[in-house]
Image 1 (cartoon, protein in one colour):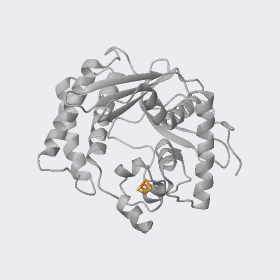
Image 2 (cartoon, rainbow, N blue to C red):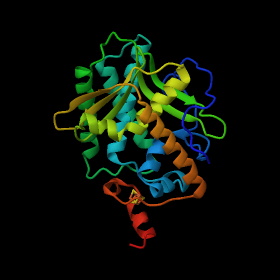
Image 3 (cartoon, rainbow, N blue to C red):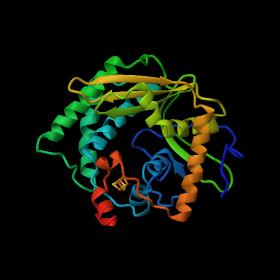
Length: 291
Ligand code: SF4
């Protein structure tokens, strides 16, 4: 398979489209098992981290309990989506409505999980829920986006063609601010440095840049990572970056090439490292390696 170095024959530019009202529909079946049906930031990032982890998650499709940190992050993300969505509709929500939404959604999503969330001890779930709300309140207080600013897009679901024989690139962008500033929300236990955050999330940002350009026909004006930090007293860290560089774009295409070739070869090579400490499949991986 030849290397891909640019968008070949892209789809005609179109206005970015918005998801339906949260909870009323889903445009793409993200449980799609076919690895070549579409490319996404999470698939590419997992591939980049460890091919064997990719195998467990996307090929064997092993279902594991959701880690508490991941569950908390999802709930925070949903509230921010609802908050931005209401701003977009010019029907802003007050704090009590957002807190009620968090609490209700927390209960519903807990009930919908295939396995119980592995909280360390009884009472941890309530502490985590209250902490999630404290993080959100801190964000609402310190958010650099003016309450009057109407988003250009919220939970923007985009898919762009990369040319014949290459699966389309698919993603959901948390928020697009006026002028084409792409915002992604992160919740984390500690503050990332601005440079390290950009480095760690380079693949995701490049994917968003590419799908934004491919779909709108315009270049994004930059990226923002809004980190909600889960310290005892929550913190908010905003990191801002310029548009995707040519080098980032080129590296993304080399990664896509590597992904497609590796899947064709079924090259599920393990990549042991520090990231194994939070891998869902560590025990199985060690067994498979005869350890
Ligand atoms: S434990 Fe490490 S090497 Fe094994 S699958 Fe997970 S990330 Fe890969």
